[in-house]
Image (cartoon, rainbow, N blue to C red; front, side):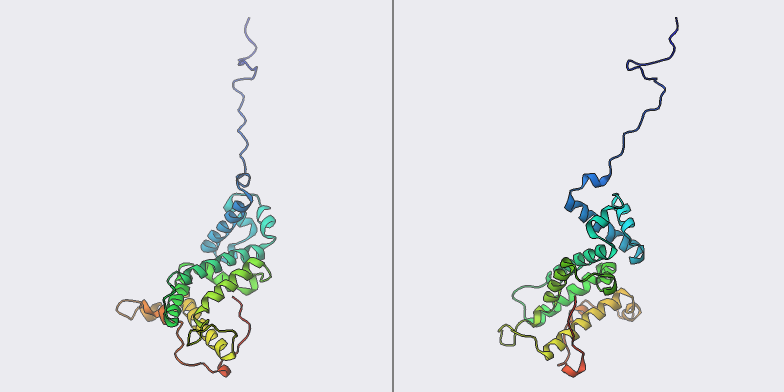
Length: 237
């Protein structure tokens, strides 16, 4: 007597298609902090490739391989994601500015080192640098962004922390604020010109391209700035 069908020991038809094991979402493999970091890393990758116009909560989730709800759970909205990414940028900017400084430097030497670090960071991370100063897209009430901005500004202005006799400054005068604003404007302006490629044809005329000391000189103030020459307001890094 013939068997009614070819069955294995389990009674299942050998020719029946096997169900594939359900794929586990990558979000299940992340710890809470690791998922947040992965989303920020994904957001930065999109920012570099597509610019800020291509960066959305869904795109960052897709890039990280997690559920579409994950970015909203961690950052609330797109402004929150961009703000936390900008905070990371300010942290890296601070590190870059400090990289070539040391305790034995004179104020002018420290100023040059900070200037190099500022411009180096901007040239290496142009998309992130531009995001950091897109105030209309960022939420400056977020603690991480506020703190990172304060630290970066503190590093940037640290060459002005002491008086000529070496004593610490206890208050910010209008004249000093004008000098700091002018110095920041010089180094930031150079960074923006380099990112936009505005100086490419200009430096191409030089025998060896852009001179290395250009950024070093960017934070030096060529003369005393009068308070009436610049509108001094609150600094926001």
